[in-house]
Length: 217
Ligand code: ADP
Image (cartoon, rainbow, N blue to C red; front, side, top):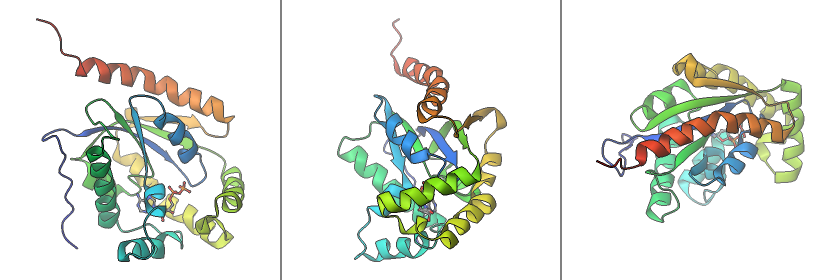
């Protein structure tokens, strides 16, 4: 496959990002959607992007081959699709990198993806949503019925998704400095989870906005 073009629209600038990190069913999507509705934040979920691909296209079918079995989509392909999506969003004026922080949901999902993205994203914080596995499995089973998700429909695929999380995704946590990782108890009531995340984001956002202001004199 061709090398991944991670070139930004703004030369030399890395996208300011926070990572929503956690096992399947830990609530990344739920919290990410809410955070993305706050002015100055842009939510991007690789799972949602993948599910929106046309199954008639070769790319859509390739992604489906992996995701429906609970496996990770290959790193280069994942990042290529995500970059195209982000650039498209910039082009149609839905994403404004100068004023918005990306809430990354589901990316990076392997240490290699974190490495590839190093020159593209500036990770301000990693929000690690931590919950009991039995609770997460319960959520996935409910979601399978509500959202018609094939990857949650069988216990075999769910179990593979947890294996993949332990083996391939968890090492992402070690990739970033420990002082950037914030643990949030994802077993709490949803509004408490949100409140804990927001407490972390407020100072980051204030700093980000302050840096963007043109100082007089
Ligand atoms: P969940 O919310 O349960 O964690 P997602 O919607 O984020 O699930 O992702 C669904 C599936 O899409 C994953 O199981 C995987 O197959 C694929 N996927 C999503 N993000 C990535 C990624 N960064 N790299 C590779 N595969 C991914």
